[in-house]
Length: 68
Image 1 (cartoon, rainbow, N blue to C red):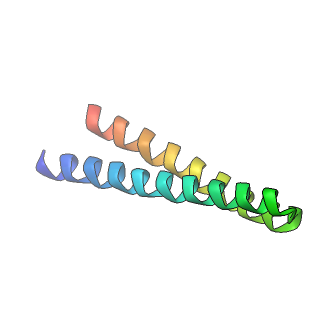
Image 2 (tube, helix red, strand yellow):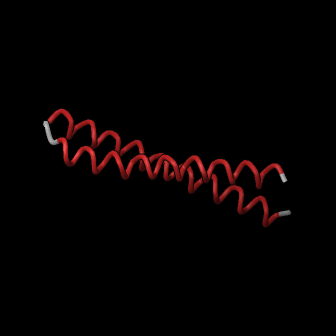
């Protein structure tokens, strides 16, 4: 039982970290948009979407394991 709780908490914190990285990358993409650098913005936004998707997956796994 302790191991399941530890894994759930670990996945939650990893998801939170991934969400923070996604927010920072979206902010960087916004700065590139203001500067008119479309190519760099698209690259940064693509990575940010991947981090956002991974955060959702990690939060979902954490919830599923936590409910067991």
